[in-house]
Amino acid sequence: MNASNPFAKKKSLFEVKERIQLNLLRLACYTIIGCAIFIFSDIVVKGAPTFFKAEAPFVNTEFFTKSPEILSVWHDQDGVKYSMTKSDADVWQTENPDLQVIDLHDYAASGGGILGPLLGTGLLVVCCMILALFIGVSAAIYLSEYCGKHDKLMNLVRLSILNLAGVPSIVFALFGWGIFCHMAPIHVSVSELSDTTLWAFPFAGGYISFQGWDTSLLAGACTLAIMVIPVIITACEESLQAVPKGFREASYALGATQWQTIRKAVLPFAVPGVLTATVLGITRVAGETAPIMLTATVTEKGNLPFNTIVDEGVWGFFSQSVQALPFHIYTLSKLPASENVKPMQYGSIFAFLLLVMGFALISILLRNRIRKKLKW
Amino acid sequence: MVDQDSYSKSALVDIKDLGFSYNQGKDETLKGIHLQCPEKQVTSFIGPSGCGKSTLLRCLNRMNDLVETAKITRGYINILGQDINARDVDPIELRKHVGMVFQKYNPFPKSIYDNVAYGLRIQGEKRKSVLDEAVETSLIGSALWDEVKDRLHSSALGLSGGQQQRLCIARAIAVRPKVILMDEPCSALDPIATAKVEELILQLREDYTIVIVTHSMQQASRVSDHTAFFYLGELVEANTTENIFNNPQEERTEHYISGRFG
Image (cartoon, chains in turn yellow, blue):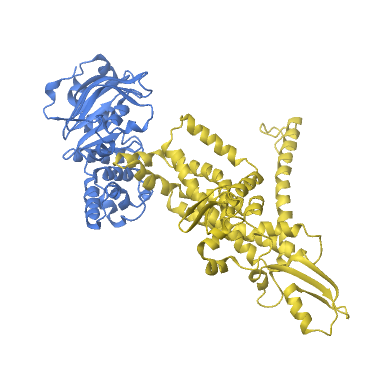
């Protein structure tokens, strides 16, 4: 130690203050990490046992191959506990008439698996994103490439988009329910004509009736799409603006029309940004409960979504109601707390988390792959 | 001012009393420009920053149409004898005949081949043989063929700065324009790459009419046959390069080229 070091650290009140501030900021940061670790570990620890089991194939296949059913729990005169779905229980009881059924309890939606909700959520997300990306990207192209920065009307449009992004989801839910479930036009036969139709006129052997699509996959997907379109438009517009001006100029200078320029010199280079918007959209859409609760989902449903396409065709497929994971979790959360419901509750939440992360992961990997090719 | 006799060759680009404004005609960025660019020669625009030389260049292929508030306030520009701001002129057709190379080299993040073929492809050319041939002749024409012939399908962004700029020139000549506009093509390049591009410009002069904007007076004297000096939106003097540099008629020109201002 050199006592005459001119660059020695000076101990002062100022430095103490500095340290306190630093540690406050650090604490704020660690709080967030703490919350995340707590939530994730709680879900994984309590949800994983539903997923995996001790014997081969180590994965609880039933959880992914069955839809939710009523869970029956009872014990016999020897004190042996039984827990199975209600349909299995009926079979079991007729096969074992000598054993008494004591203290029988039924728990809604706690038995079986989550195949129905999983497929339902997947379908809702895919249908919604197809609609939302088509409309959102088109609108973003129009706003970014065709409209001037100083166009008053278009600035009003941008302002509305921002406001729309801030509307609570329950409001979208009610509008979706009102418009898609009760007002949207549909082609029906005379016998299917509803009393509550707004207006109907004869068309192609039946009626075009403004009576809505009822609780259906399509109504849910449309409602979710409207909810997520503002997010997608904003993100896409930003990614289009981020494409260097030089690409547009080079394209125009070679005699390209505006559409050719957009199609070949702007859009391909905005794809990573569009995919980021998709990730944002998917994570928001998959997690929403309110909009689909009113427009698309049912608690219990015997048929899997894909079975209807055989029996009722394409329209039947889109007009069927579906189960969905967030709504399934909501249903489960309202059941009285019990040891018998818990595995299903945590298992569903764990599966939901994995599903959303999986969607996001696919988009991120895809984006990174494309980004590698497009560096400038 | 303009020594008309010095233009022995016919003027391919003929600018008469051109006025141009960036804000709906309120202030003029270009104030009554008279200028002619002879065929198959190099004309350079020099002058300090903000004098309007790049603006004039961008008027020649109507690139300023992309600026919403831009407006031609008076005069006209004739290219190949046609007023390019006439009502029945499609800027897209015009730009197929008047190519442009930019200050910052801007190849697309695609392959070298796709970059050169871009112009032909947007014109609807799909035949591979035609594209292959055009790509080869353009790359030979821009003195890049030997350097890239083995990696035509790798990314253009793997090339050096000078190579990228020559690729942009190849992309511009692939559509066989009559005029090539160059907006400070060497300002982002090092001296060696600059020398190569200048050599290329002299070579291209055989087939194309070239208009080049440059900040470097040495470059103007090296590559151009004619030089126009702009100052504050006005054309101060236009003449053969030799006359401008050795025997300027205007005091302002003399001051500028001797480095007393700008």
